[in-house]
Image (cartoon, rainbow, N blue to C red; front, side, top):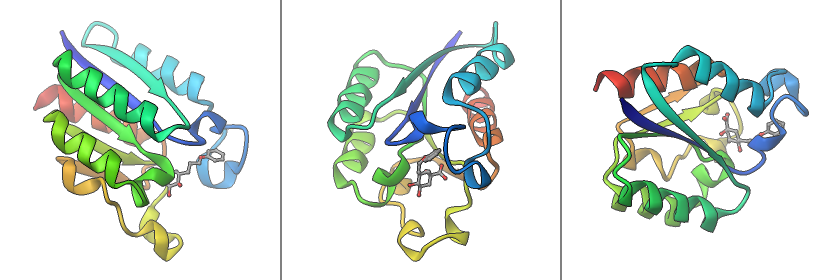
Length: 142
Ligand code: CA2
């Protein structure tokens, strides 16, 4: 069974608790439950969220060493700022799909640049939480 890790960056622990007009009402714990149910028997899912850049980087290295089969990452605001996160993804050599709940291209100009996207095989933005499901499905097929 493929092992897929789902990484969420800063403030995504607040999902469902703030700004529901942008991010919806589902919490990160609800999302985890739904993903586990959807892929039961098809994938081993590992979830990790941190508000700290270095902790996300350490996790990516750990997953790379453990030869996990794929990565889904919503780097939150670090997407737009972090060369370190990009370097970690490039160095990990793991098939990675970047997910954004919102359509970052419809939002402020500073969200239009992703420093991490070039280290990923695909980017999904604006599908809401469905983006996470699509990303796992894609990684399972590839
Ligand atoms: O659309 C996305 O998924 C984002 O990665 C979310 C980030 C934002 O900085 C990116 O530009 C786009 C923000 C995460 C903040 O998440 C919250 C969730 C619920 C309530 C408040 C913040």
